[in-house]
Length: 379
Figure 1 (cartoon, one colour):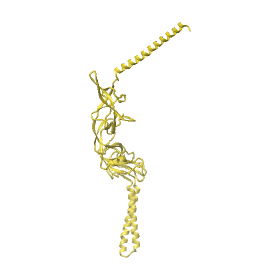
Figure 2: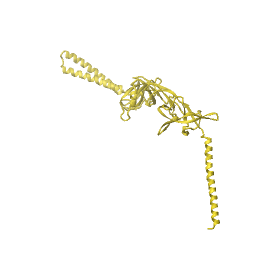
Figure 3: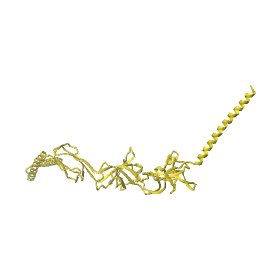
Figure 4: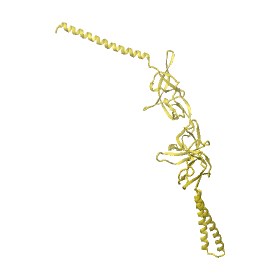
């Protein structure tokens, strides 16, 4: 091989190596420069909301959804068929026990009753004569017994006919408020056909169920607080009147009945209500909004605010993740049993973008819900 050609190839390879080395060196230098620049800038701060954790009193309670039921309620209906002759019903009116609601035509029954009453009077006269004749030994004891039986039979027939006549008059079985009726005079009613509903509204019951584990915390006379969505902000108070002695084997729940005062008649049977029963002495818990706690497979965590090294003469706030043990919840709140001290500033929202050491900017203009008695909002 030509000696000059070998020299040229060596020179060319040296030049290529120098160029490649320069390129690699420049890339390494550029990467280090960028890394140094980013390190000098630091991690950008994240905006969060915070609050200082404090103790609050918690009232242990049992919550349930119940249904209102009238103390006494019935759909009034006739026992016998008949033609309505007169109506005393006024929809929504208050009535007393025994008040006449309507009457049905009973001319034939009344006429037959008069006939039976006449027969009964005759039987009574025959019995009296029979008694006098028996005393004078003018008739046998057997004849006297026959007259006695005839009198009793006649009186029984009168009583039966009077009962049939009374069934033609529909009366209120107890005090209460009438519902809406569409019955009119001249209408033919069948046995069992509903004429009007009658409900006794004061007091009123609310029935609800409780899990069997709560049975030891319930007793008759215990105070209950009931809220109804139809009356926001109003609490109806009552007392537990009955605890079912039997547990439902399908649900393992026990049925509980409480009685409420309903003086104005605002509460109506069939409504549902949210029931709260105080079940013990008040307790003190460190309290936070539930949004502050993050649940992970390895435990429950939250971020607290720590003061870092000052920068440009200003304190730097950093996030620090801590493990906690949570307790019961109520509304939007959660109790912290372990892992926090009173007065610690805790991140309540925005923690999903945090890690240990992340700089923080605190903005509490908008705070997460923290209502102990939160309820679903209807829109």
